[in-house]
Length: 145
Length: 145
DNA sequence: TCTAATCTCTCTAGTACCTATAGCTTCAAG
DNA sequence: CTTGAAGCTATAGGTACTAGAGAGATTAGA
Image (tube, rainbow over all chains, first blue to last red; front, top):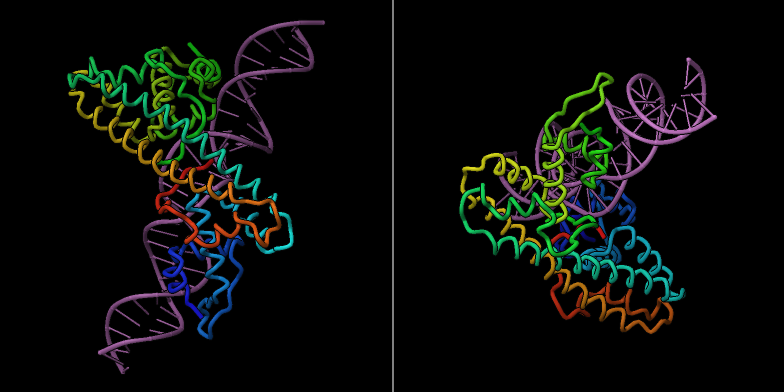
């Protein structure tokens, strides 16, 4: 049996994150020791590793919740899992496309900077006037850096 | 003078977002009409357009705050703005690299799916076992889809 | 002029996915 | 037996908004 710290170490997930996953119902409530500490078996480790890997591939927690319930049901068709994975792939492709457009716009902007004063700074000017841009690098939220 | 709705329409920013920007001090508090409604001039429109454009290029609000205070000070050196833009470019490049790795991993995973049952589903299996992966598509938070 | 539709106001809470803090208890090693 | 690490709960914070409630303001048309 693993304590939460060992489990986290084995799966590469931080301890508060494990407690968070339990809180939102992604991990089942584990046994407790006499002193009220969580104790995990190897099934919990598998499940957590699955979650971590899916997160590393960018799947949102809700998609992971669905994938987990599919994997709990081995007789079911694979199609649903396939759909989720394809949605994720599409999301990733979309983000790459947007970021690539941003990258070229930023590169253009920076290349034009003559290192003078703000008054004739291209960076500031380009930001202030969208018509300087070649592309419609517009919509869609970008995640944090 | 523009009402908040007109301003939002002109700049392409939603009304609650404008109020939010005011709340966090990114936009100055505007005049009010007799009926307590916000009234904006063209300077506010410029500033809001600047913010929107910088957001579209993925700059975080804190970076935009810095860029705005630079642009309020036209005699200053352009170097600081250049640094901020280069940081943003580096962040964008990093995200593209990570997403590109994710994309190939997802493509590989999906290509292997034989559309059988969950029991032999490659998607589920690959997620459950990182050793199936070629790359270390690991770290770094990804933003929402 | 009245009314109905639209806009605006403030305030609070919720989204995604954790991370950090505070103040406490339990456990393992020396 | 003591000390320090690891565990516990609960709450708040971060990013950049978005949604909703309930009330007041403004405008267009009849």
